[in-house]
Length: 353
Image (cartoon, rainbow, N blue to C red; front, side):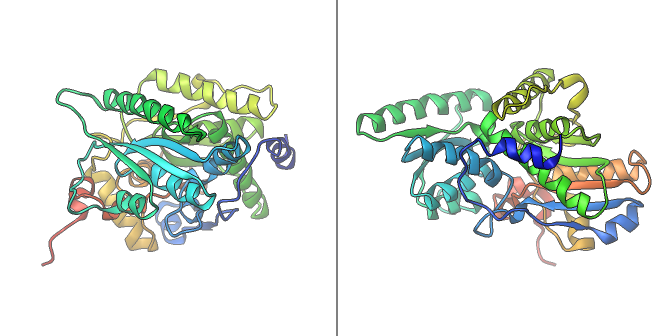
């Protein structure tokens, strides 16, 4: 299928106007020379109307387009207290006249007297914020499930008052949100065609799997041979791959394609760079963040993009990327985390000498 045909399929979905697309694609010349590859960066950190864009803006155009078509006036979503997705949802909802309601698990407990980064932006956007503190012995998944139940009760309350609520899963990871990254993949292909290039490798950070699913779906739909390397930012298992492939296939069905994504052949996750866990930094990501900043003057974050960048650098240094190959790093945003709690930053924050 051609890029034009793929984009035509997507026009059947309702869509809100939230971002600035296409996002820039530019070559990282210094790192290209260092690694003997042609390294480009896809700048979805430039996608939003404010300074704090990211990959969720693509998803929210379709998700909130659906919400508008359903005449919803409240938008619910979930994440950690420093969730990029939650912050971008709050911003997007406000721009469309909706009220955002956020249920945020305190994986890293915020200082109530020193609210920072995305949680501060959530406040400025006037979101209804519910911080879900983790109980003793409770896992992240347990706390997340509890937040979903709390949200259901709040939705019932609002519904009884005549409000219509739209529920967005964590990361916008459903077939509507992932369809946005079929469009994103088509957008990238258009940009590369204009440069007479084809992508050999695409690196990106993956959390809930929605972006991963959409890119894989786009890759299959367009018959591309790109090797998409999805670098995990938290511990996952094979079921994650199965669920992500199912999500990708559902996104294809949503736009009228009968093609399918298979986890054994179409998905490639790498679990070697997330440790010790979500919102917990490591030295490889810290080094990658500093190296990109000091060679190209571009910032990434310790939770998502820094870990994916560490993966790309390791692949390049260990010879796993073919010389002169075309490599894309998909910058999914999130640099607000550079102003988050010290435990998220790790050794990036240093005392002045």
